[in-house]
Structures are given as C-alpha cells and as structure tokens.
Image 1 (cartoon, one colour):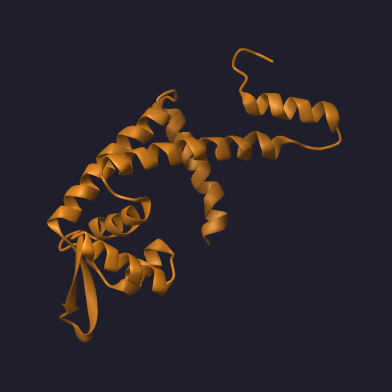
Image 2: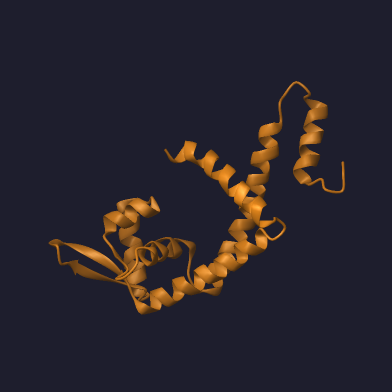
Length: 165
C-alpha cells in the first residue's frame, strides 16, 4: 500500500488475496462512490439544518425556485421532479403551507386545479440552503483541480445516463 491508498484500496487488496479469481474493479469505483455519498449526505444535512429546512422540504422548495418567477408549479409537476407519490406530495405541500414556505393558488388556466407558489420566506430559506450546499460541496471537491472535476462530472454523467433513460 502506498501513502495515497485509501480504505477501498485496503479492502480490495484483502479481497484480491482471498479471491484472486474475481475482478474487483467495480468495487474500486462504486465503493468509493458509496463512501463519498455518505460524506455528501452529511454535508447536505448540515447545510439544510443551518437553513432550518428538512431534505424533503429542500426537494419541493428547490423545484419551485428553479422554475423561475413566479416560482409556481402544479402538484403534478412537483411529483415529476421529486419522484414521490401523490399522497406524499399532498402531505408535503400541507406541511410547507403550515410553515408558510408555500401557498396554494387557483390555476388561472384551469379553475379546477391549483398551483403551488413559493413564498418570500420559502425563497429566502431555499436561497440560503443552496448557498450553503454549494459551499459544502465545493469543500468536498477541493482536492481536485478544476479540469479533474470536469472530467469526473463527464464520466459520472456518462454512467448515470444509463440509469436515467
């Protein structure tokens, strides 16, 4: 093991001694992704905690904020962006209304439908959270040069396209 070895190197090395008949290259990639995912989860939870929102609130509020002015989406559009069930989304909207982060409004294009609109307080929370999140994620990547980050992003995009199709 070299000085630049990590825990995954140690795990793979031990497995290679025990099972030299197997190709452990998938572990070298995906075990690191899994470990990095845990660090990312911790950083995200802290960014959201400091903004006084939960991760599920982030999902809805950030979808509304990304929609641009007037920061409105239908519940169906929110479902598509957050990948939760209809009942879960109704519950989330109810709870966000109670916190005054969103409000329900009649859809002017369809009187039978509603739109969910981000309130000023919700916008302030989500803006604070994205600032903290970007800062925290930048710290996680600080050991990589910009061109390495770009190369990694390209490779991860290539890998994820197979799952997102």
